[in-house]
Length: 74
Image 1: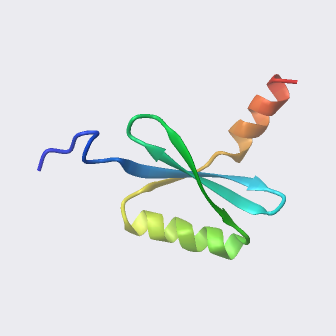
Image 2 (image 1 turned 45 degrees about the horizontal axis):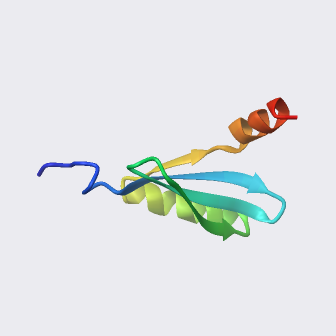
């Protein structure tokens, strides 16, 4: 099976911690980012993380890098 960017469209999810819970983002093969879902609790985040892992997706915490970028932009 030939895996190309066209056949492997979405394989990574990142999330950041926000006041309301955890905001998730889908990353496509072409580099675009799609705001996906707001998870209200740590339990919901852990369930999503396990589902992604089971499906072979990468699941990344982007909270610290976003905080760093925000500090640098001030």
